[in-house]
Amino acid sequence: MIPVLAGLDIGGTKCAVVLGVEDEKGIKVVAKQSFPTPGTPDSALLTMMDELEKLLQEQNEMELKAIGISCGGPLDSKKGLILSPPNLPNWDRVDVVSLLKERFQVPVSLQNDANACALAEWKWGAGKGTNNMIFLTFGTGMGAGFILDGRLYTGTNDFAGEVGHIRLEDDGPIGFGKAGSFEGFCSGGGIARLAQMKAKEWLNQGRVTSVCSNQDEIAAITAKTVGEAAQAGDLFATEIYRIVGQKLGRGLALLVDMLNPERIIIGSIYLRQEALLKPIVMEELRKEALSYSLDVCTVVPSGLGESVGDLAALSVAKYGLEING
Image (tube, rainbow, N blue to C red; front, side):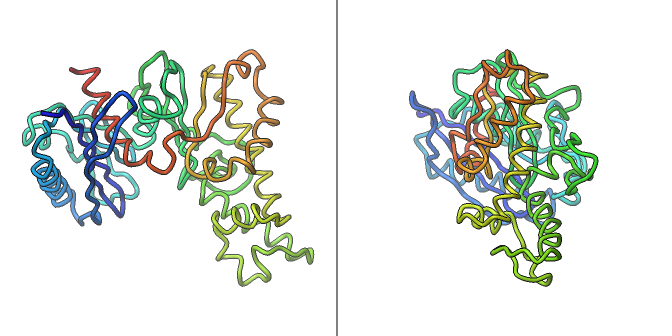
């Protein structure tokens, strides 16, 4: 029998069940099933267990070794509880581990999505071989997962890594409930809000941008439209990315000074816009971070690319198996 890991990804709009098999090169997804997130936690858990059962039956030459669950926080990884994430209404202290353990009789582990992505990059991606590593989501929000001294660091109650809440400026776009925060400047929503704020200024000054031509179009600005315009050389969009790059560099400098990592891996928007962001980020880092720490740290995009989400829950299964047997 071939040993197989299972990963369950629980999202606000979509859930996925994935099976993966490891080899010397990494991990290969051998089966996957996605479906809209059911309306209640009970129905979601039942659907995930049934879908996992089906996938295992279809891959009947494989033996399930462990299950990993990736979900947005807050959560309690030690007790296996999901604690009312903002994107999952009615998921209040939901035990997502016990039922799976009982049904499948294998180790089951739970981590928030940023920690899960950090584990995936550490095991199979750009962080492979490192002992001290940081993964930054830089997508819908700005969160982090920390690998410190060769272990995932989750903090006292699973709230380590909430770097998006750090205030970088007294004012600025709102992110994580705080104006001028790391997430306010460095997230998809934050970039859109920053561009909307700046577009009003540009239009009032009579300056031209391809991102919007009048006040009525401001609300339609998104991170995607700004990124595409910046890649095409639009001056307004380029200026937005200059600000974002500076704030990203400043946030990274804090992490470099505090945690002295050997690698910082950044996903989503940085992965897609590295050419625009990297020169600005590195210039700011060289100004702000301790040189001794920066000299031993590299900043790279996600090595797993857009597949990191599929592999995240699988890495939770692998890590749980390693630390708990």
